Length: 173
Image (cartoon, rainbow, N blue to C red; front, side):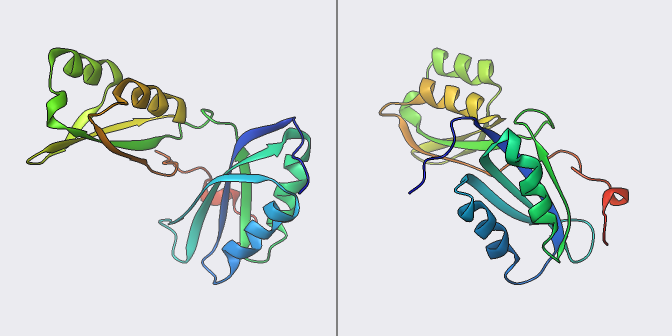
């Protein structure tokens, strides 16, 4: 297997396209052929009928990013592809931490307040904390909570609070 260039940086690629069967496979083939590591992939509907947003978190050499975007936009169903650096567009993830109720203490509640987490639900034996933030923020809170009281953890794909592209930016649709 080829080694990835050391100048590869984490980026977020937003792809607006028609909702067609097989499109995701075509996009992933480009990343695989070029040996770019895909860390996260999400497909979601938009407010525009028959248009989806594909969000890819990947390690792509900065010098090759423009060429990759051009190749993605050559796929017939793709209207537009744009790249962003992590933190550039206010893109966040949501992390869920399932914790044993035995963790309740003053220091626990101080930690919850410090990191801006909220209690999402409380069950008979456990509670679920929810925290919005970057991978780094979520990992930092995970490190603080890690131990016998942490029963589970998961995080979402990227969430944008506003549109990554305006309708006027669509080149083909």
